[in-house]
Length: 76
Image 1 (cartoon, rainbow, N blue to C red):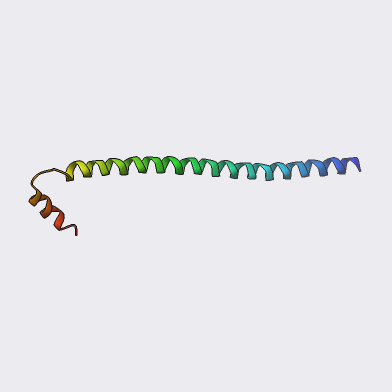
Image 2: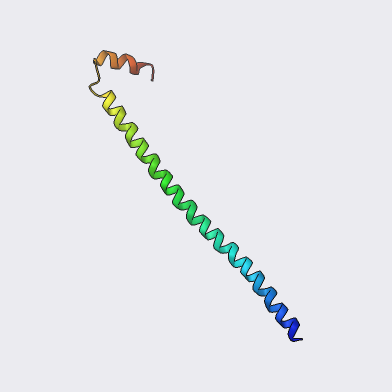
């Protein structure tokens, strides 16, 4: 009877370890995904800011106003 009880406790421990490992791994994966999404958002924001600065630099006061109007006319 004692052998059966020992095997039962060992089996429950193994199953509990697997379940705990899956839960822990899932939580870690979610945290890693969140960090990666935040990093990607930060990089995308910096790229958008830089493109906006380039657009302002190239758009305002860049050449003759008539030429700027002709270039911009096709974008409407």
